[in-house]
Image (cartoon, rainbow, N blue to C red; front, side, top):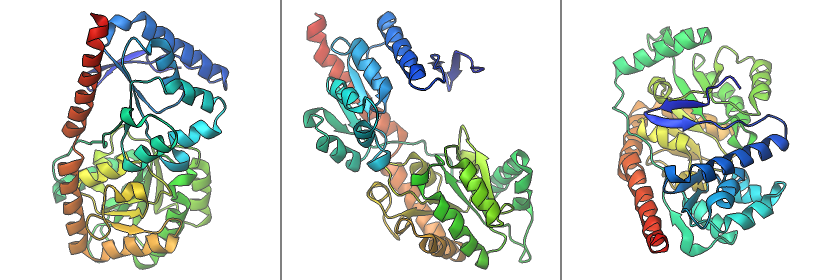
Length: 355
């Protein structure tokens, strides 16, 4: 409620519609407000692109479908994805039925593409457009030190990141960025960190994000006496500085569609340990751009993390290869071009109707 209704973010105007926190009623109020705004301001936009195949998408199709092109982006995969949500959520099947009227569906991964097909969405309207991320400048030792100083300024518990160990080296640091959700495998990661610290007692793990597991993770960290080495940092608007400060990125998810967090780590040139699942394999290959491990396996996570920590040459090779793959296949300009091409195609199809 304290957030401003209108802001500019990265030179883009952002309008926030009110969403009361009352369960169900608040969602309905938001959907009505969104549909009303789209109808009232139809002259201000050429097409509508909605993230996730849920309530927002339903409101958009209901409001302007058939008159203005509507593109729907499916974001998640598996049990955390949009297709599964439509099967399990109240009114999910009704929402799915209405969404079939959209002009196009964007699948950011091959796994999500297959899910949309299996769910009955028209194949001719499903478009595979992988996510894209900006490619930041390479990180050198000075940038890394600066990033760690910034982190230590945010959280006093991270001041030890600046203190050299007995060998004169800075403590090792791994990061996870994303939602704090049971399906992300964070309980196994925290448990595995105890094993990592048997070999690297001064190593730190930073978990950046928010979600339903926050309190549970805080209890686990305290019960395992890891409060000085495992840190819950909360959400970040940008993870560039966090990745620049890190020696390793970890993604222990059980399921992913196409992880933006993983793409950001690739682009940032950070060595990666991730779970061996279809969504991750679409981005990185085992022992080429990352080390992939089985899901729900704290010991395997710890072993892969320790391997990267103990082999700097391997870490550098993986990081460089991942960054190159992100530049070649998953850059933001490429992603934007493919979206623009699709938008222009849909608008061209509508021109005869307008005439």
